[in-house]
Length: 121
Length: 386
Image (cartoon, rainbow over all chains, first blue to last red):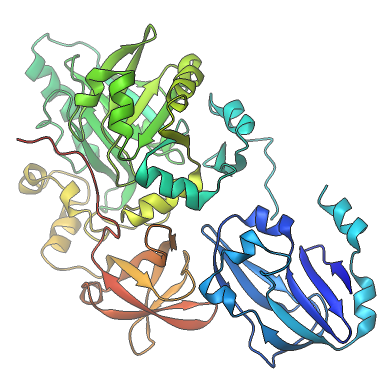
């Protein structure tokens, strides 16, 4: 499994043909207390860069964009009742949705660990 | 997550303290101020509701309007200074007792709010008023007040000082150990006290719905006062984020959002701020509109909403039960004390009645909302027994 990142602070953990998408620990830290998550519909087909979900803190709403193109195959419905999971466990239990990756070559355009670490320095 | 350039922002005397404490600094009303500290808005909000929160509100506009040639007759001097400010506002200032203050509105000729403000009668100096206005409007407000004063009174701006708000159920106990006499103040009263060799103006007021105090100190002593208050384990520093969620839960309007030059006090549900004596005399700006609105000729009214689902923020449309657009949210967000989304906005008066089923449009989707009585969280102001 490899994990890649977008400059907008989403991660995608690639496992074969699917990827688990969420926001990075850095992003949740910046957003502050998360109080509401709007999940994508299962079956929704996203193009890379499409708005996929919305994460709301006390202060503001932030769009979450699809890191790659593909179909939403699963969502983390736990976030509906426990949006705070995004603060406590953004990169594991606080994942947002799973996508069936349409074009594996898009993965290569994303940032690796070192690239993302540079961005958030 | 872009941050505006901080180059043009003014700093309050407490700026370095905010940075040292890990405050996340944002531009606000032309000042660099902390939106939150490391514990976050939710924890800061709850701390204020349970203990005592300390806020830097030095960006606001405290000032003193002082009669140029007092006669020495306390009542005559108060009447004279009240007569200078009253033509600009809808509140009864002549009727204030020494040390009493009042929430009121600065109005334009059509009865719209130029600002909301506090006006207090000096507890000690006849012919002197304490006037505290909002940060974003203060230059305009002060120009209007100074013009009205002419050579009859002088306006002394105190906005280079430190203004601290201590809010929450433990605030009175903290104050009892800092300036014990100030802990005896009644709600909406103020006094001037000595602390560490300087004069501090302390009022029992605030904008969180909690009991609390606002303390005005000379700028060079602001850090010392901040540090002394924070040395008390019941006190934590609180940023602008929680200040906003607290005032929203308290159902209090925010200038520039729920109030602007088009909104009258009646529309804003601030009828209490139009004092009876002034109503009877109809001698305030926009009186004909405001009195007609009070008699029921009102096209819109501020409503308090509980929203199901995602928070409805400023600008979100308010819909009736059938989905017709009837108004707009002027401030909204998540209420940490309630665990729900809440909002303020304007709708036709008939639809502002508590219990009315409405909807809000968030990202193009209609969500259920209900008009409710404000405040969302009961006020806990300290009322002295009569």
